[in-house]
Image 1 (cartoon, rainbow, N blue to C red):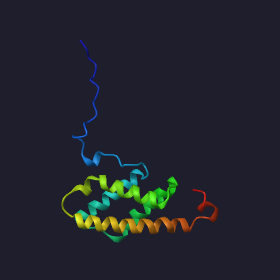
Image 2: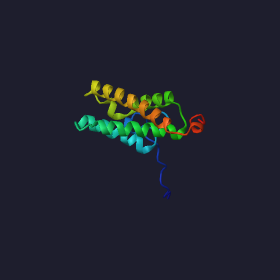
Image 3: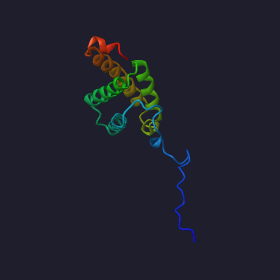
Image 4: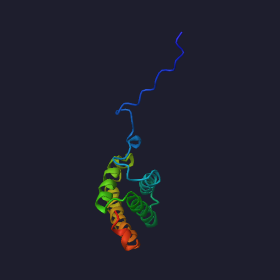
Length: 127
């Protein structure tokens, strides 16, 4: 008698939810991705605060700096990541999510260069 456990097969692409999909690049930390999801949930649930948007933008910029990427790469990664999040695919609130993404992009750019401005001059050109 064979008592071996059958190998688990990974779920087919059709059976996975969009929330299970990895971000298109590994630029953002797990905590930053969770913060972005919470931001979308806050928007959906009606408790979105400017301070929350600013905190998430700061986390995005810090991740970009930790990985040594340029602002343009950060924005591409943010938009690509945003597009695959399951919360973004919900039909209700499309215009609000577009406005939120626009605000997040603006603040992430600000935070990216604000962080950069506080680095020593020799560290600014190291990446």
